[in-house]
Length: 137
Image (cartoon, rainbow, N blue to C red; front, top):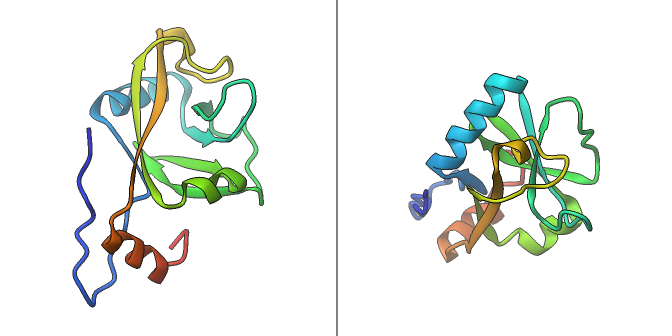
């Protein structure tokens, strides 16, 4: 699992990663991409599948003004609903994969695996770097 802190040097801007991925999740992303083509991840505060990260074929899930692009995992964009982002904006998300049944519309469901979000709070240094860099830059 990627648990490294951002290398933030005092006085210099640093890119803080908001979302990363474990090696096992990356392997699953690559399998799904080979089977379905380009992918898109979205994590909402939804009702049915809770706040599980959902994986869709890119173009089959519409994102809009109510979504925030947090970054990419395995070369695939990862979005979060803006309302949920307000709760999670101080955390670094790590997308992992565990045995079990995923969301009913998420592509990993038939694999017997599900994506799972793990998180940790950003360090003080990371928070300062985030304040200096607008989201999406």
